[in-house]
Image (cartoon, rainbow, N blue to C red; front, side, top):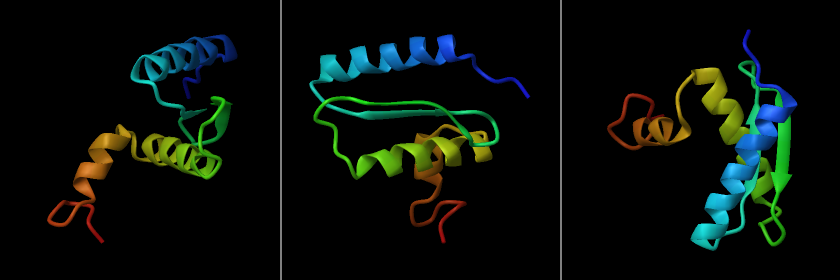
Amino acid sequence: MNTLTLEQTEYVINKAINKAEQLNIMVNIAIVDSAGYLINFKRMDGALLGAIDIAMKKAKTSALFAKPCHLLGEKSQPGGALYQ
């Protein structure tokens, strides 16, 4: 199982924070290993508290299905392969 190092996850989180700042949004960022276990997490000042759980669950789902969450979202819409 290949897992990102803490240093690598800090790099990814900083890139995500920079992008969020460009978009003027506050986000929660969760990074998990391939089994869905949390490696690193960061909540930007002003990010919604309720979205902490969402970020962690999206990351875990993406890891367990080995697919990006946006693709899983598309496939879980009515008519999609994962709907219901």
